[in-house]
Image (cartoon, rainbow, N blue to C red; front, side, top):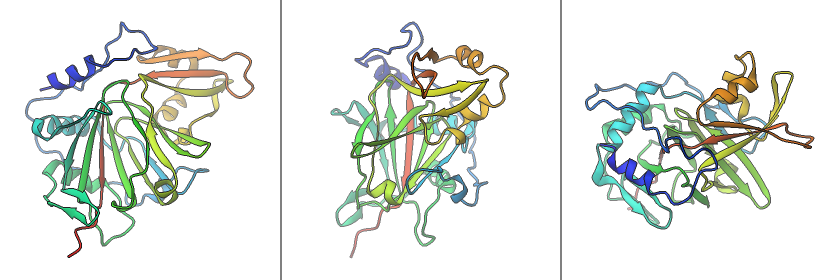
Length: 288
C-alpha cells in the first residue's frame, strides 16, 4: 500500500543535515482493515486556542487527532491511489475532493467521502450557515515544502489544516516580517482574517526544521516560535527532570549549543518525516 510513498521519499534529491544513517521516513503501521472511527468534536469553541501575541487570527490545537485516528486517515487516503495528482513543479502530490474551484464558484460538485465528512466534524467555521465542502490532501516527502502564497478569494477565508505523521515549521510572511509555528502530528491549525488576507503562508523546502531556544535553569525561557506554549513539545518539556538530556535522547532531534548569542542558548534541529496535511474549508457554490 505504501510503495508509492516510499518511492517518493527515496527519490528526494537533497540531503538532510542530520545523520543520513537514519530512516528517511517512518510510515505509521496501518492495518489493512479497520473499523469506522468516529470523529466527535470535544472542543466546542475555538477562540480560546488563538495563538496569543500574534496576528489576527491564528489558532492551534495540539493532539486533536488520536494516533488511531491518524492511522485510520492514512489508510483511507492511501486506499485512493487514483485520486493522486502529481505537481511536478513542486515535487508534491495532492488529492482533491468536493469539486473544482473556479472564479464562478465550486463546480463539478461531489460529496466528500465518508472519512473526510467524519473529519469535518472536528472543523470550525466562523459562519454557522456555511458547511465544509472541499478538501485538499497534500503529501510532503522530507525536503519538500510549499512556497509562500495566498489561498485567494475563491475560498471562504477560514482554513482548517490537520497534520499527520510528521512535524514541520509553518511560516507566515509579510514584507520583512516572518512568524514561525511548530505544527505537530495530530494537530489542527486554523487561520483567518489578516493571517489569511494579508500574510503569505508556506513551508520551507528543508529536510529538517530549526527551533531556537533559550534554556536556563532547566526551563525554556523563550523560543522563536509564536505558538510554543500551546505545543505538545512544550507540554512534554514541562514534565521532564532535565530538558537538555531529554532533547538529546529523542529520535530525530539534534540539540546544538549556540555560542555568543544574547537571546538564544540552543538550536533544536528536528528531522522531518513524510507528512500528510488535510485542508478542509468552505468554497462558495457556483452562482446561478
